[in-house]
Length: 198
Ligand code: 3PG
Image 1 (cartoon, rainbow, N blue to C red):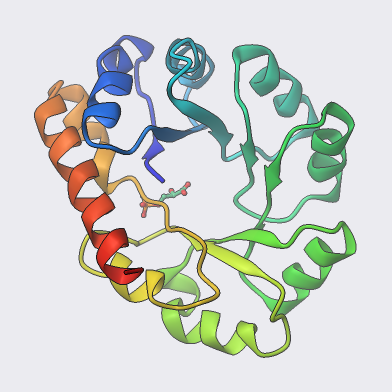
Image 2 (cartoon, rainbow, N blue to C red; image 1 turned 180 degrees about the vertical axis):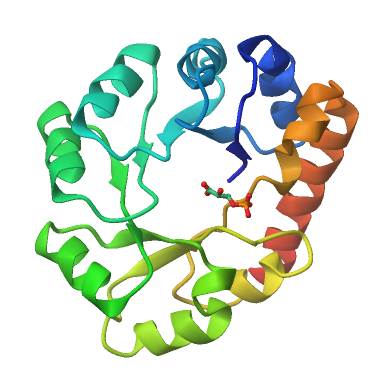
């Protein structure tokens, strides 16, 4: 899952095409900069790209995301208020967790697909293996410090549903409008996932 931090909405104009060329037609646009909402709206206008809102921490952002065309919502941590707003709007939601306590809060709200964030700083592969024991029903999306070097190891864990990261769409690549690299890195990520899950 390419994680996008848009410094300027104009910079993402070529991004949908680049991700599609790379065979990875999905993006999580983080609510982290003043340009995020405009960037989300721009990307979501391409119906062939599955666009979600990331770094959502408040219920009102779910409404903004939905109105801008987001088709799913990702949280960096657990918030019952945000999950409840997503449910009210029928919006698929992936809350973030980094502890067993967070996982229990998520399960209390019937969320079983969870973003493990920040993955590398929170114990990485070992932490996922440890959480798998008490929570066999949970599927994780590790994000935060995940890249082309360690993505395969995460994806080989049966409880990992996907990985996310900014490495394919790094702000410097957007700033340089280097969409050839975006496509190449997306293609490489697809290959890594296919090799990890033959
Ligand atoms: C996120 O919000 O998912 C992360 O900031 C992505 O982490 P990364 O930049 O380390 O890939």
